[in-house]
Length: 401
Ligand code: PLP
Image (cartoon, rainbow, N blue to C red; front, side, top):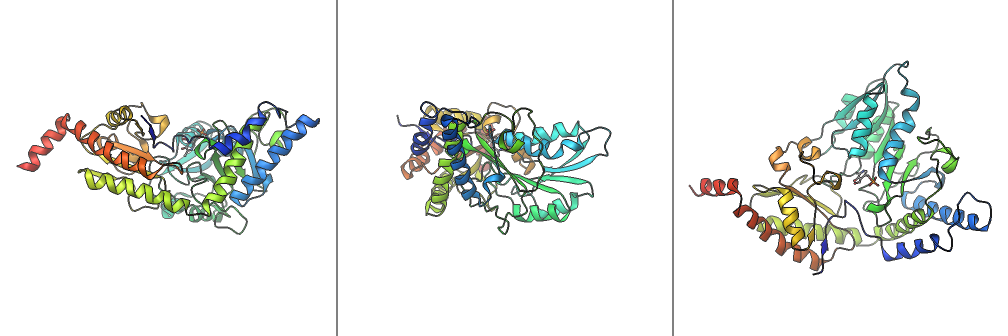
């Protein structure tokens, strides 16, 4: 059985070209990029080459890229690295604004700030999952030092008005960070000094969400933004992130960035959106009492999050898995959790409906045949689970009466 993978927001496979680019850097070219001999020089040149490719994807300077171990580290570095001097209990309290729909890498880091002399405001979202600029304007205080709002949500794919939010933060004298893990490689991100994202000071990327390996990521840090390292050690990454560079991982991320740059200028994004729409509309046409979470909001092309009333998402994930289709009930880190999704409940879903929601996330490798096969499997699995559902039986009786 050929398995179908529709969980690209959890992770993506390496593209073969990415793997080929990385391969020599484990065995032949294994040097430490800080060594001055030929082995080291070769590794350094490869890291520089990758940095340039990534800078081209994001229209920024190579020197503004800090390599990290992934999205979680970059998010933590953005918060703790800009707020180091504010953490002392003897200082006057500072204020940070983030949102109630962030990934746990931001949410839990922000909660930890709350125990360390920082007031944190968690902005609410609309029923569509959007953070309204007016909410940010209302929350800003004279002592707001940092605003962090994610670019695209990992569960719903909803895209935030980042340019407007960043401009509001800047006008109030605060720094602006965005977790762009689910946007990178899917949307054009122009961080240039005159581009639409010119007010973004810090931006997080994770390699494994864009066909590079796990364990490598980036924090974009705009020139002149002061960032203190979280870890103490060597002077790597211009003193912003200590630790020997993951050369093979960085090379992989550089290659993935080159591929993404080319892909974004083709019909690839439109084709991906068409596949997602085919899946979404196909499900809604066949399955009653189902709907799209975040419908009508701007969304990244690969994601749809659908509720199927009268079933448990976990049971549907297992049923589809047994049929060869990998999907997820919310974010990967949440799978297995008993709590309903904090993102969907923030959007106003009841916990029952949030627990009945499934995320389908496609990638540029997803085919039309896979979508069509999924469209056979999903309605059948939902119908089967509903036959076993007491609330569905009651609902059927009530609607017949
Ligand atoms: N931020 C978002 C929006 C994510 O979706 C994820 C991963 O799911 C992360 C951060 C964490 O990235 P990483 O797995 O590279 O630590």
